[in-house]
Length: 194
Image (cartoon, rainbow, N blue to C red; front, side):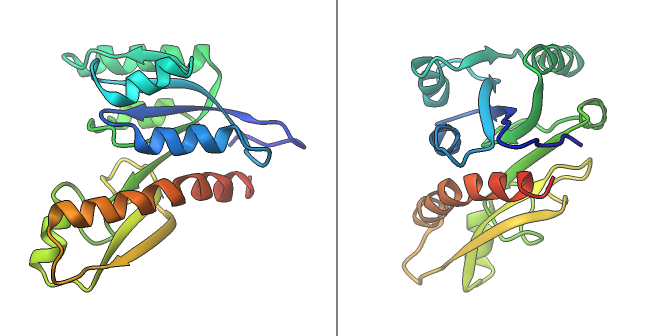
């Protein structure tokens, strides 16, 4: 694992597929005095999305990867990660599952934010499932990425109450606010321990 020496920052990449709200919170955090990261690279599998618009506007090196052939796509990503000396990958609404081969090739930290209180509700449709099962609370989890989907060690969680008036859309909005708050805290937490 990478070692932090004094105030040295490590190079970080954020992988996105959509609006980039967590990208924005990580970018904002990277500009603070206490930040331990330099946001050097944004990887996306989509062209015309708000997250890519944001990264280009803020002059972050941005690469759009064609995912038609998985191995070719991941080889391409690894090349960009090495070129930019990336030591931390933050998956932030990246709607592609990284292969076991990719996870093994990248020797440093890969973390993800998931919109449920893991280990409950891995995968998709988390808000709908939580409401349908009568859960009193839901939330989000930042965790390490392993070869098993949404099963890596939990770094940080936060939760919200599910109201009777909530539907999947209103719950998603509440949880997204939490995500934007805890992702930078989780980054700070793991980097303070290495």
